Each structure stands twice: as structure tokens, then as C-alpha cells.
Length: 336
Image (cartoon, rainbow, N blue to C red; front, side):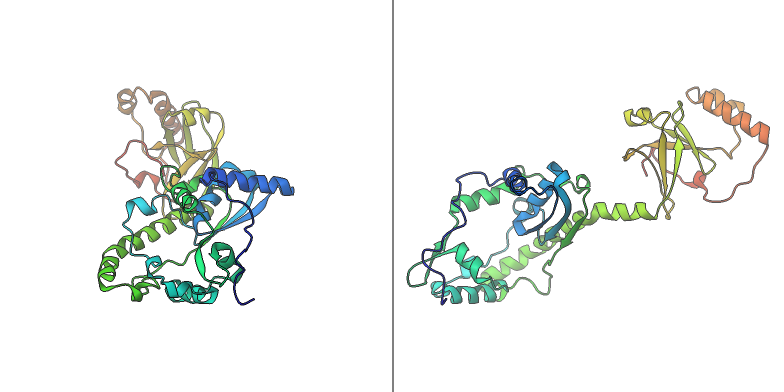
């Protein structure tokens, strides 16, 4: 075939609406249901990033793993950062002379060679093989772009996505810029140079956020973990230190149950129950408690009295290991 047939059929008729992220994700699940597939690995490129994230959050039982191929969170891409001059105003009539001149233009300006079947479906051609336009109506392209932007599509909270995810990103650099930069006019190059740092910052931000939750998981993997039963007084003991939890609703719900203490190599400590981090303050058992301390702190009087009785019974103690009492924090209660 020398080019695309002028009557290239589209896979389906284009509906006038339904291009928001919520609907696209629901459509994907309907396809799986129709095929009898209960769980799948979802792979998405470019604008499909928000679609993958929506599926993971709203239909988690269907998701085995997620693969993001340069599929960034676009929710804040277009409104918070100024656009750099793009490549599409650089296409000429000569570039649309045939399928192959169009492919050559894509290589020159975008550094990518679109497969012939993809190009034939994306563009409309006349009987002489010239490009007459795209096969996607402008109204649909507008809906797709609006659908991935906030507020219609809020920024992804990566902590809500618990399935394994792989991100493969190819961000531009200060040195490489973008493939079409040499073809811009001097005026547009100057505008590009002015706005490009914001573009790079956006890329850096979204990639960093993508991996943030996994970094926390990795830190947890290297943390020493022990379980302690939480007393009625919202206290527990770890490393010869009494931890007094803030009387929050999650903490009260954990009374009489086991909570997990995460002890990190860098000295940080976290207390959690059912995945929720619980704020605390510490009281070091090693320090002697006198009657004045008990009288001055009526709220903790019962706890301090028990500790004092234990100290009197056992006498002074030497301690080894991490010195939790040396960890100072300006806050009364702390998390982590």
C-alpha cells in the first residue's frame, strides 16, 4: 500500500460526550466485564495516566498492576504552568502531501515515527492520498483535554493507590530541550527559553509525587517493627519509654488492641493502628518520678504513680540502646 485508503474505516462511531476520566475508566471496566476478565495489568500512555489512576482508586479489585508510559498526572499541567511554543504550528502544507511526508514531519519535529495503521486511523486522507484533517472532531479533543484538568480531574493522591505501579518517564532536560526547538522562530525560541524552566519543574514535581508513596513503603520495609497492646490510659511501652497517645478517635478505637511501632534506622519512630498514624508524646521510665511531678500533672497522675511505684520497687536502672528520651520535638504531640 502506497498510503492510506481515503475511506479508512474507524473502529467505532465517535460519541458526542463521555470523554471525562470517570466515564473512560467505567468504559474500561465494562470491556473487562464483557470479556469475563476479573483482574488485569493496566498499561497507559500519555493522557491515559489519569484514567489508570481512576481505575486503581475506584475499581481496585480489577487491578493487578499499573504501568505508566510517560503517562503523567496532567491535572495541573495546563493551568499552573505557562505553555511553551508547540510543534503543530510548524507543520506545512507540504508535510500533508502524503502519508510518508506526514511521517517524516513527525520524525523531524517530534522525534517519533508513528506506525502506519495508527496514522491512517488518526488522520483523514483524500483519494490522492493528501491529508485533509484528523479523524477526531475538535469538540472531542476539547473534551479530552478538559477531562484531565482540575477541577474535573483533581490531582492524584498516590497514597490512595495501593497496587504495584511502574512509571517509565522520559522528561526533557535543559540541554536537550524539545525536538522542535531548532525549527522555532527566534521570537518563539526566546519565549520557549523563558517558559521552559517551569515546564521542567512540572515534570520534576509529578515524577517525584509518583514515587513518593513507594519511598515511604521502602522506608517501612527497613524499619524495625514491634507490636504493643494499647492500655485504657492510651499508653504503651517501647524501648524503656512510655508513649502517651493523643486522645484522638483512631487512638481511642485502638484501646485494648495491638498497635505497631515502626522504629526507623535514622531514629524516627511511628505508631500506627490499621495503617493510621497516631500522634504521641513520650515519658521516659528511666527518669525518676517524684511526688511533685505527680501533683503537678493531675491528668497523668495515675500513670505517673504506677511508674513511680515500679521505680521504687526495682531501684535505679542502667539502660542501653537508643536513647528515645534524647529525642526533642517542639510539638507536644508528634507523628513520626
